[in-house]
Figure (cartoon, rainbow, N blue to C red):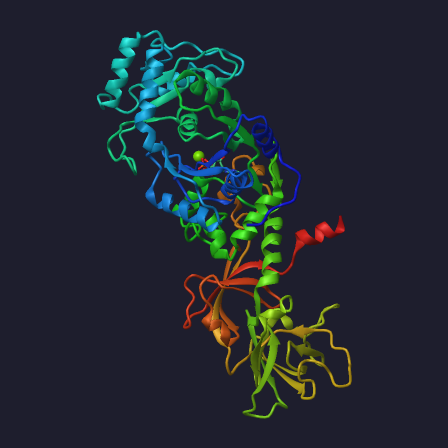
Length: 558
Ligand code: ATP
Ligand code: MG
């Protein structure tokens, strides 16, 4: 795995100090997703951070499913999360499930009750909310706050035994209803949910809340540095309060970092699930989705995503990362590693009139000019070929160096041709071009050394194969999705052109054998990968990223 030579980030500094002072003997981190959806690129940042720190400091990192809410959690998500972490190139030290600790959580809740630090509250959730107070007003004690320990123990056990309906009562920590931190105003720690859990089935009908469970999960696993995103900063006193008030096996400490925000991207499992359920996309792995499985289908590599996560760094203030930087990371890698191929996305027929009938020439083309070891391949050409419709203009605008009547261009790795005649249909659309080739320009250079500016990609009618091509663009039209106008939601910003399917593309014959996810540079277009459904009979390719690099250009100008 790649190592970076950058100065230490704030977490690395903290860990270095903790190791040097002897406070931390063995660094243990964890990546703790809730299995309620597929992982997105924001999770990749957390994965690279937690697993990366463990690698850097010879520590360990657990993959832990934070599965304390049976309502939204499913095994399908567990499987996909394991697959994604592995695909990104990381190995967990232990695979853990918060649900394995349900018995222990229950005991600790009882311990809190026994120490008069928790009580059963019969108020409705509305009443609890109302009595919580505001930032400027203290909360009001629940009328049930002074219940005896004995009564609380009895009621909590009966909650566990299923004697009460959902919402009838909850268990709350007894902390401080006038704390300036609202999280400390007697937070709910257990609620009744008569739901089947994806692992514990119907064993439980009470489930712990995130804040109560999370620190305990960390403590049970001996996590030394529990890293989460900034919105949990105000929860840290509560995290510590639970750890301080029951007999836990180890004392973890929580640190917060800024979450990843990307331009033109939404990153919330809940909203991504809505896109899937409402068929706005084809699934969690739709190549337009910001999910790890979406990026995989789109042709991203694990190393490009790791590089992106390492280079954006870790900070304590929120910021917005340009999605073009992510594109830049994959583009640079594919430029070095992918073989070139000719693909004509919107074909226009070209007949070379002076080409002798039934003659086929076999040319040689480099597979990857960036990598001589990639070798060469044979390309055949004959009398009828196809070029890109956009490479011809009957009345060329200024600066258009491609084909137009009377103009000469180079067919990549082949011959120079000049356009002599344009054939149109009844509607005036160009359907066919008649050209002549300089038969002495084999390989693409004129014998007299005359300069020919435009170079076009092409395929030969005799061996080109039909392919489907999926072009993709941003799923949303808004650069910063937190800037939505009042009264609008993200569905108002869906990009109608985020997917364009081209069904009439023609590609060079070797691409029939492309394996799913195999990557290519389609000359003059961009990087594409074979779709998971690709076959010899119907090759399908997905656009990974175009050749244009707005991010790289911006950096050069700086
Ligand atoms: P979502 O709101 O998308 O469901 P979440 O934070 O609820 O995200 P979890 O499954 O709880 O999702 O997240 C697992 C870990 O990934 C947490 O430690 C969380 O902080 C981290 N994480 C989630 N989103 C991001 C992000 N955008 N950038 C960095 N880390 C993230
Ligand atoms: Mg969540």
